[in-house]
Amino acid sequence: MQDSIYCAIIPVYRHENTVEAVAQDIIRKGLHVFIVDDGNTPEAKKVLEDIAARNPDITLVSYEKNGGKGYAVSMGFEAAQKSGFSYAVQIDADGQHDLNALEFFIKASKKHPGNLISGFPQYDSSVPKSRENGRKITNFWIAIETLSFDIPDAMCGFRVYPIKQTLPVIRKLSNLRMGFDIEILVRLKWKGMEMNFYPIQVTYPENGISNFRMVKDNISISWMHTKLFFGMLFRLPILLIRKKRKNG
Image (cartoon, rainbow, N blue to C red; front, side, top):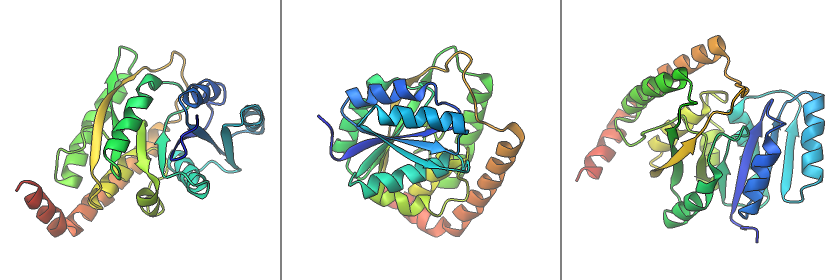
């Protein structure tokens, strides 16, 4: 039986050969799936169109030009809201997340309505060293930008978002590519959204395709952190007041 409140959003760029297995697993767990074609090649688009055509529980959202992961997720959010869904589970298309955790994450969201529910990755030996190191650097900056240690991981792409509260923030993001997962958490935290983090097993597929652009994305993320830092300074009085109230 399909859940009328929760859906899943899967941004897809160059992962057309792995997304159907991910989507089918989600559908078996009772969720409608929005696959977002983030400006793939004509050949890949045809694959995604065929997947949607043979799966009535999949809606394909498609556009011509690649906009990045964040843009794809935002388009999925827009489509999900128009279809009447209140919560969206963001899931990567390459199959790296353990979808056996999906039921637990949905229950956690229902227990904490209005909160963001995010995965806290439990990596196995397949994790690239660059990912581990990048996580440490990101956590350092997140702690500064939010004046807290409330966000233990900002890079996991397995999350449950309340759509109504999240969409206005997504529409104002500066980084809709690889910095999206990081920036959205910081800005939602600034808005006062509560967050809950739970472990999830993450396995990097052998011969997996990465869409990370080493030079461009690193420059973009560095610039994003610069803007978030100064944004924190602008909001410093409010953040300090919230912190004081939280600590009693």
